[in-house]
Amino acid sequence: MSQVTLNASTSRTTGSRTSRRLRSAGSIPGVVYGVGAEPLAVAVNAKEFRTAVSGEQGLNTLLELDADGRRFLVMAREIQRHPVRGTVAHVDFQIVDPTKPVVADVALHIIGDAVEVRHADWEVDQQLFSLELRTRPDQIPTHIDVDISELRVGGTIRVADLALPAGVEPVGDPATAVVATHAGRSAKAGAVATE
Figure 1 (tube, rainbow, N blue to C red):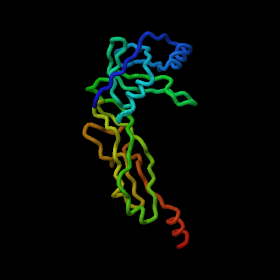
Figure 2 (tube, helix red, strand yellow; figure 1 turned 180 degrees about the horizontal axis):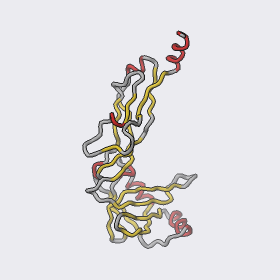
Figure 3 (cartoon, rainbow, N blue to C red; figure 1 turned 30 degrees about the vertical axis):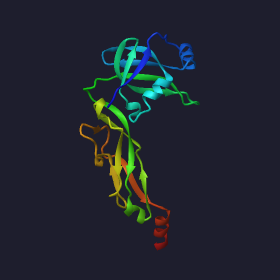
Figure 4 (cartoon, one colour; figure 1 turned 180 degrees about the vertical axis):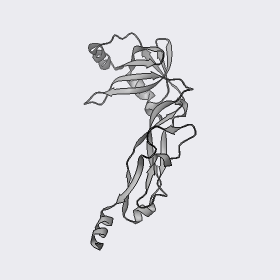
């Protein structure tokens, strides 16, 4: 995984008035925090931040934050958005150790065609769209493929059934359903007609 350098200013004062001024000037107020480090108030350029997290890794991008000469290896964590415009209003940067696991939210992509399910007029229902994974920051996958080719009528694909890369483990219940199947309209109508 490549690192992206993001410049930050540490000269901002805290407070809502200062934060509003920063946002109107094209900056995002934020804070850098982590184990063994005092929270540090920073401000980053909104356009540079969007560019930094718009790659394949999204918010799981490993960032090298240059805060007026002090360098931190961070990931963007808690992001607050404006309720109407949807623009980023505040961002928390968590300092990470590249050798220690972190928890990251990764998108799930459905691939393949559940032919048997389709031919029986049943439907595939994706119930989970992202999955929390624990792994080292440099091993966070961009997404996880969920192959539904072998899915049968009445079948379910659970978290435990997913093929995860080496060194990556799911957080939470492995029995959670990712994809399930249910009868479509025509299959339900056929069942009612035969009763």
